[in-house]
Length: 241
Image (cartoon, rainbow, N blue to C red; front, side, top):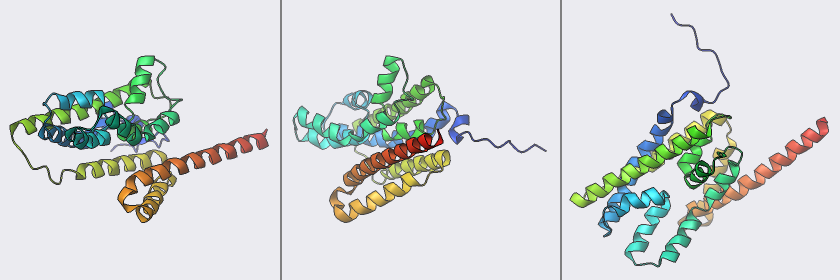
C-alpha cells in the first residue's frame, strides 16, 4: 500500500522531462510540417528547400502563406512584409518573457526567434526559476520536430502525389492540448474567456478575417488588462506602506 503523494503548489510541468513537455507539440508539428514540406515540393520547389525553410524561418502559418506567393512569383519584399505582419504578435510574447529570457546572448536571441505560439505556451507553463538551458532545450526540440516533419513531407512529395485531406485537424488538437496545459498551470479563466469573446466579436464583425481580428483584439485587451492589473497592484502596495 503506497502513501498518498503530498500536495504541492508546483505547476504540473515542473515534474515533466523536456521530452515529455515536447511530445504534445510533436504530435502537431510533425504532421503539419509534413503537410508544409509536401505542398512546397508539389508547388515546384526542390526538396531541400522545405527543411531549409523550416530550419531558418520556423513560422508555420507564414510558411504556409508563402507557398502560393512563391508559386505566383511574388517579390521577396512582399513575402517578408506579409511574414512580419502575420508574426507581429510574437513581439508581445517576447515582452511578456523579458524577465525569463536567458542572459547568454546566443541563447537569448534564439529563444526570442523561436517563440512560436506553441513554444510560448509550453514555456509559460514552466515554474519560476526554470533554467534557461531547459527553456532553450524545449524550444530546440520543438523546432526539431517541425524540421523533421517538413523533411518527411518533402520526401513524400518527391515519391508520389498523396492526398493529405483531413490532417489539418492536428493543429486544432494541438491548441486544445496547449490550452488544457495552460489551464492546469495557471487556473485562470480570464485568458480563455478573453480569447472566446474576441473570436465571437471578430466572427460577427469580419467573418472573412475573423482569426486576424480576434488576435488583434486579444493583444489590445490583454495589454489593457495587464496595465490595469499593474496599476491596481501598485496602489495596493502604496496603501500597505
